[in-house]
Image (cartoon, rainbow, N blue to C red; front, side, top):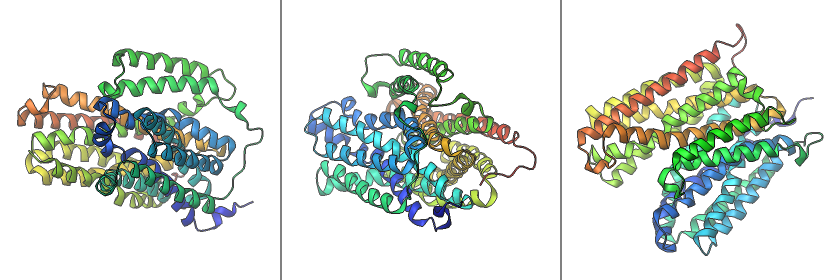
Length: 471
């Protein structure tokens, strides 16, 4: 029997899914600009205040795979509505928080809701969007994610100019309410799997995975976390927890992450490439500001405008990248995106050295669409072959792999930049030293993109000769 949802125009469904993605993205970005105000308001240190951002990011990271699994078991529409309700309640708690501890608690709960809003839209799109439009749907979700990243700091700044910090969380709650209405009206009911219950959840695996992800998140957050455990010890804990997780997953009857999924060459390669591309994406955010400030000598306001080029271009190029995926096939566009990513990173390494701000902006305009091409095509390639009972879980793993890449990039690429610069303080380094370190960092990022391209070619070569390219 034909699913009636697929016979209808998917526009209302796409708008609901896009709104959910935008809500989660705003939840990440809007709080960053509030940190100086909150530091003064609660009379706390910067390290303590940064937990307002870290609590959200860590909650998203540790729960996103479980959120996808819940959608597979109990119905994706039902779980997404639950996630929106959690996000609304957490936003209200954050808006009314009397102290920092309550605000951090609210942000952690907000992250749990945000994990559901990140994990499930891709799997719902796979269920309800016609196959020939799946790439466009993935591109739209990428566009709204980038738009939320770009709009969040601006929205937070306007709120501070107009009202106080609490209004930012009230606005998040209001936006989530509108998204809830859209989801209820546009997304059709889906069924619960026969025999599904909380006993079907892999509780031991989930707990061990949470330990592994928490220790990794703390290790990559560096001194910002304020945790009195060295990053080396935390990484050792991550390794041990990961080994235990693999052992647990091979022995339970209903694993959270079946090893067969990760061992599948195409699907596993998609997750690895997602991590690598997320790593180099983060380099533009954590290394770029130092070059613009201390080598080119730009003021903070101008640096902000230059960095905003990336999210704006990403928002404009997401849907076209999805349409290219629908027209030419996911794997072709994915490989083209990786080639352009590598070339764009080389442009970013070299052009600003010779053409200044203009070269930096030109490189971003070449690089950012490549990211969107890869993300739309890779998400489509992974999701197009997913069985109905695996779609939420795979969607969650895609979100997790991207988050792991972003966290890795924030730590590894900034550490590489500092090591190449030869001093921990860019303000004390010579302009030429900052520029040289910037160039070498992005040459290294291009090498990482080349590794991702090699993996993509390898995984693509396993496809049967004559088999259709997923769209």
